[in-house]
Image (tube, rainbow, N blue to C red; front, side, top):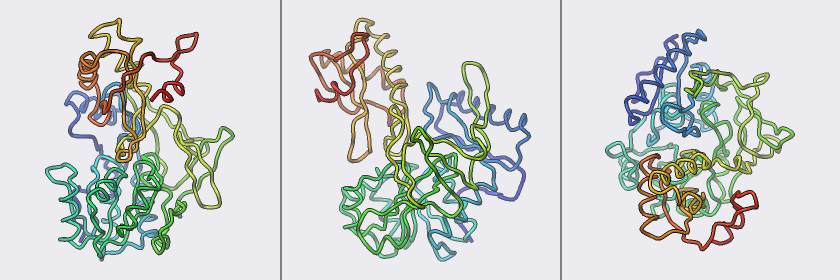
Length: 386
């Protein structure tokens, strides 16, 4: 019998709304009301509402929600179980939030296969030492992690327990250097590609790839297909595709279906070779930090607001850059021509407006922020300065 952490009825017409319980109560209620209103207006039954991991809006209440039918969710889970050869003999470790599609997907896969699910967070937070001990104590066989969590395992030098047979890695690109280090320690990593809109992964490395140590191809699962449009963006179709979006906007409550003939255009550029996907990166302002998506252009707007609160004359003297991070994939840095004391005040004001993973992790002082004749920042020149 599967030990799930959610009361799941995949056959009922009842709708389920999964939101981050740590959001401010007012924002939480606005999103709950949004989902309830849209499902009533569209006549949706048997759906689950989940926030997109990439939609970090001006406030939590403006987060974009995705409606996934239970049929779509089941299709995804069945395909993943088939790909992983998962049975009732498996034991999943759960360290992903249930209100994210990755964590919710584990619960559904276990429910369908009869596998056991073992919670492996400590006080609702990721702790690599606790996670590793749970793997050993419970003789876990499967897990799903984001690259940041893989980084922590490698940094500790932990070797994979013999019981582990596969770990799906999603929530951002897995760096090849980190992959090599983890495989050297025996961790059975399967890089994957997916999104909330497809109810989790639609492409994952094959179990056969674990026989070697080379970075594997990420291959489409049985329920999905992909192509590239003329602009170079990846388009996907799957039995697990979402039904619609919903969002609170300045114009009020909005809901829409962006798919065309059951194909969804992603923000990712890539190449499709046979059944293999080669992801080349997201549109310029979208980055993932520790598995969480954010828009850097929006963060710069929040920085400007923070600076305006302190001293409007500072606005043209600071900006933000997303910089590569071995552990997090990317991180936010402050670029400034101001004093250390001013930078500290700016960082404190900015931090009060953003989520923890979006905070400034490093400050750089430069003599000048290069700009064009029109006053636009010359990003490449700025990066070269660093």
